[in-house]
Length: 393
Image (cartoon, rainbow, N blue to C red):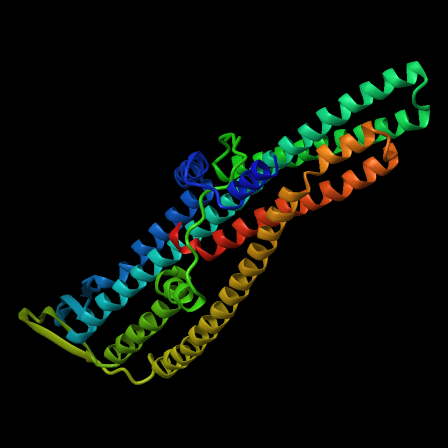
């Protein structure tokens, strides 16, 4: 019996690949397709990407026509007609395209970050539901056992073998477990409602009691390097630097003179004049300090990226240490809970009259508390793993 219990708890701790993993993957795909938040965020970034392309076109041509009445009339009337096109300095168009390209790349990364946040939140909820299902199965087992114990004691009471106080203690224990079951089901309904909200209002059922298979956790340096190389949030900070660098190049290109060319005709005193129009705009004040402002923003982005990289590393280290602590504690629980075989021993001791029902419930409470702590720790372990491997979502 002890060996069976140890094997069972071991399976719970290191779940083999199976339906649980497949179900979570299926739910995550559903949420990705149905989430109103992901859909709205995608449309937002689609609009932004279109906006990033708006400055790539030429300026609109300008058409002017003037008709001036002469006074005195003998001088005749004057007519002026012109079509002009304003152009940036040629290098500016290349810089605009490069700047737009980096902005679009950044928007795609930011969209990915938002998507992963929603999917990670979904995974948290699914893991909570698996925990609640597992806890419900355990509570149901406790309820069935205590209910049978109460039935036996009520029969003994009729025979005069026990006193009413013992029966009342069994009733109280059964009521406590019943309330725990009710609370468990309420928490499950709250989690299911949250999951439906994440899934665009579509209900999803989670009936698993086994957690998904865990990846093989490498050493911290390897794991941290992998996360840093793949985490889109880090890429957002790095891409921000590229965007600002391109913006600086664009601002410098925009500081070159603008060119104006076109056609101009003029009619006055019976004479008509036709020819080309050319002009130049000297950028003396319009772009003043824009380059310096963008350079200052780039300096801030560089420092901010370094800050985030350090904070992210420390956060990964904190999570990694949590894994180690929980893993060791869970393994100790597996060995200890498997070796206790508490229920069978308590039942035998109670049946032989070696302990009172008060002592029975007290000792049982210690065992229940330890097993509940084990289940909570198991859930927290999987949540930490999910957070560390968020970049894979």
